[in-house]
Image 1 (cartoon, rainbow, N blue to C red):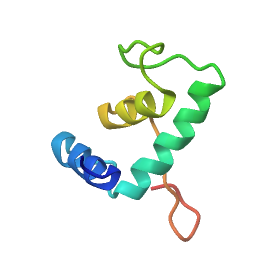
Image 2: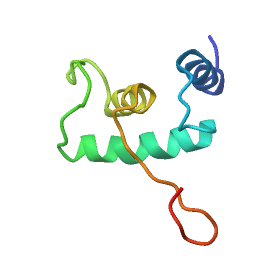
Image 3: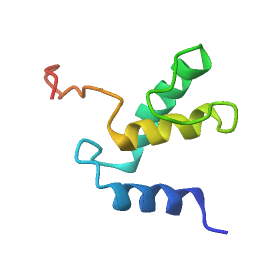
Length: 79
């Protein structure tokens, strides 16, 4: 069985998400989206929420590009 780290790296390689520059950013964005899903937000992708955990749904949403996010640079501007 492969590790979670290897699965995340494979997911990033397979999907080639240009906005996600590292696996750490992927995890942070997906974690925030997962909290939204746990609080009642509806999934933005076609997936059965009764069969998949919010974390998995959030990861898929981020990889498919349905979750928008902004990064801040050191001077406080959005990138």
